[in-house]
Length: 295
Length: 315
Image (cartoon, chains in turn yellow, brown):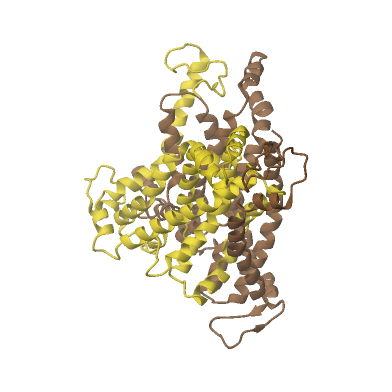
């Protein structure tokens, strides 16, 4: 990895910028500086969010940015405490919906991926594209009948209904990801397992799961992120009981920037699980986000 | 690729591999192969295809929740309304502008950043982490952050920084509503493009670059003649996947402008028809039109992804 040639100054590979002489090195230093500047620009909004979340409401609403204002937990106390509705039920609902739907997705996707790669069904690529096409159709087109169905069967404002929705939302992604991980396993391993007389469940448990465990983990983390982030369906289908964290956040949409520290504290706390999951999956994030097309 | 069942494992009922790959699969074998797939496939058909059929059916009804007694078959009335509704036409236009601008700008920025990151330098890991982070903020939270803590005319960071140098900044969201949304989405989606394009850059065979450099090619020549052609399919893939998500964006539009000031895109407009006007028939017809539009785009998209898949299966 570190032996990658530099893009512009090709032949000089892994030399620390300070040592070697010549014009290329000088350019390298500038490019490194530019890279840092770009990274900092992208990171500033997040830094500002976290910093503001530790400011008092008075300091947060200064007209000149209060970079060095004293830090306080006021925003977090307001978020978790008295001001407004408690965030705990939405946080728990989100955790519940994300974790359960992810588990369900894996239970359905891993055998499906097996039937699409290891011992493929005929026309397996058509099936792959069926799964993919459901992601390309705008979810909003299905919103209304799903809302009517939920109303009819009394599942409105019920977290289990959200679990079903999120499972269908993430299943195609998981099937594509898991297929790409399974396709990497040497076929000889399956042949050995089948010679030993292992059935599907045994093959899955003893051969596949141990080998693709990192892939399964990455798939799970990405499904978790998408389920945790989802807002449109949750806003339409949940209310008081099953409200999820992103819906809770929409309560701040019209606040006109009052309670800025509290808003930033809420945004920070609710984003934290996604940041943790994302960095945990960092190595496989690309493969996951590109549905296994890029490794 | 076709079959890996070269083993003769008839010992158990499950493994009915038929010896050589040239034998036609038996019926039993077919079902054994299909069985693991079926739960997922049936689940997806029920949860995603049936609602769409329902949407199609409802779109031919005059059905407004405010007038429940007046529900009747209306032929193509809703569709006529969809195509003559100027708000809806505008929202189609807004959706296209929003998607194209966000995808193109984040692709270009993403490529630039990927090129910057594809080197060894001090603090590369930390820089990479900082660049990825915007993609890992909950979308509603990110939109709220931009709306209140950055764009706010009185105490947002943007005008706060301008204040420091003595400039009074504008009210960003009311003066540049669509651009405000675009900038927030570009901030969030550039990391996504960067990740995919960086993986593409790292899959370039390094020897060709070295050979070109030895032959005296300038960095610009190497970029246009070697890097860009190699990156084409990665750019396509990143743009495509980004477009799929951004066409459907609801969170940023809802949070930053609540669809006002000419920023209502299709998802937001359908949401409005459904929950403000409670017009189920019209919302369904809008949904059907959106699906048909997406199908046309998706056909393109699938063709591009399909070439990636074929490439893989011939390996």
